[in-house]
Length: 334
Image (tube, rainbow, N blue to C red; front, side, top):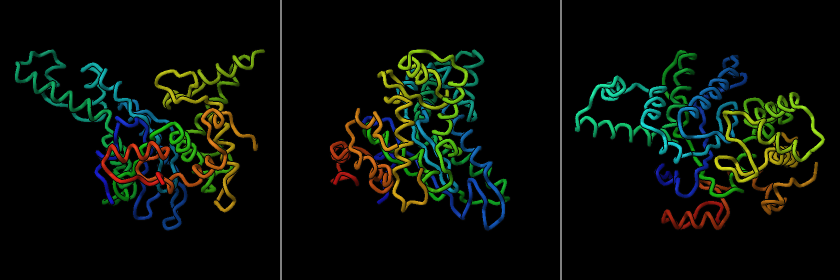
């Protein structure tokens, strides 16, 4: 049953969400279309560039992404507090980067005095814009409409480009976040589009590995492996992706970058052979830290989209979220 978006995006429960959108009419985001003989790899570049632009405008950070042949996955973090802390001038500047302005706001920017009624109206406009700048639906609306316009222009056609409204999963705890990010980063491996993480084009993990590789090549080697590892984790991450950090620093993903890379690599090698693709055996440190059993983790990685619906997390968190939303249960709660 379709649920209202307001019941699926609950910032009081979690700020992390898994988002998916899929094309219609055999439309391609990338690769060779056997029906037309055209190659559409360049459209993946459109998407990556657009999500990064939007994340520089919205208070919505990218934790993971994977751009596939006819759909894409995003894991995002909504930083509502950041948006609420913006000055009015910053809200205006960000909004004007994407949308047309308002005559009243233009007058304010020119330094023209506003009477009391105009000031009330001005404050209402800024409050509305501020709220939209941390709204996932507005983020996805801007992303999908832009890609649809560009693709339709290229295809010389009109009409729907996306299958329907985007799908979302609320990631209620750290285990759900970590397993969902790994699920997203492993999409090209499982689809047999790539044989290694380094070759997984248009994914966040490829971008993180490339940045890490460039950093290590330009870093003077030290005789203190522990200190070097901390330096790598703190300084070698893409600026447009939400960083990892295991030291409980605010506004970071609460895991060590190197541990995450090891985890995803290990998980990719353990995928069942009945999948289309898979990529030693040691359980990563992060699994021990989170007390996740190997079998439980593998099941989560292999069946993440099927195991959960609009909310993902431990059984306890799912039951709690269901009670909060006055429903009997959510898929995955047992």
